[in-house]
Length: 364
Image (tube, rainbow, N blue to C red; front, side):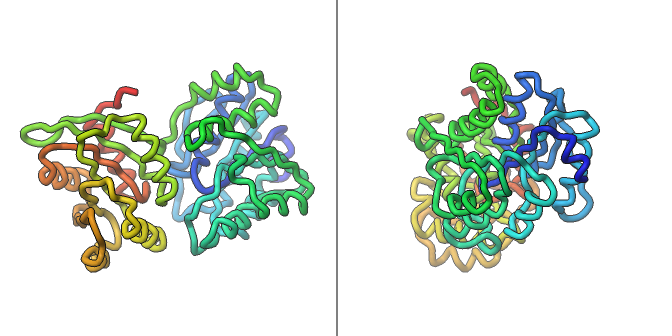
């Protein structure tokens, strides 16, 4: 493994709460545009390798994911003669994150996409605690790229202790999470010697991650009604989802159209379910007409919803995308904007695949 590491001239690891897969893809695309032989690996929505020619291979898994998967990625990159490897980190627990970074990947360049409140049981319940957990990935002598708005004492202290170098990246379009990802990737690529024009051209042409924000138009029901289907499942937690909703208000004409939520829960993410219930009680869904619930924890939610304010939470027992959509479309005969939130794992992934089949990509 150490020999494989040494054969790779440039090793870039990407960690953070949200956007890791997107940033990984953007960096690899920017380097590829300038002639770098680069292998990229994403982990989030679907584990995949992006090969030096841009083709993708899904990573087969048996059982639960393990950071030891990164050993095979290192070997593959070395066997392909890659000059650079860009890898999305897998770890949630701080101890694993430290081992994955410092003992497996040994990146010279570490990118921290952002700090959001998620995985609270493993990483901490406040932003400083989560920043402290993410800082465990900072190894000796590494160059760390970080959005300027995320700089904090925890990262500064870790950089000072390890003798690393910190580069902060300003986001000119304040509040735009998409632009922040692009500027972060561009800063890394230009730092590695790629001309800015080539970096931007490659980044603009990068293939989207499966879990990235996607929008479809469809005519559904009998008689057919106009629907806009939005996949924001991969945002997972309320803070990132709120940024996406702000982006959608500028991208879509929502005036006069019913806004309907489809909130997907996972059995192994009970703490995240609690976050969403708290967000509902704090008014997160105040602009929504109704919020449908799918996935795990539905029985418990039938009790909780009686205590919640508007809009109503409506549990759906359907386990297939077709059943879920039939029930929603039958109840909402006027159509509307259906926004998928919560968790991309489980039925979230299957809903995205279903929407790709029944809808057509929304015009930008």
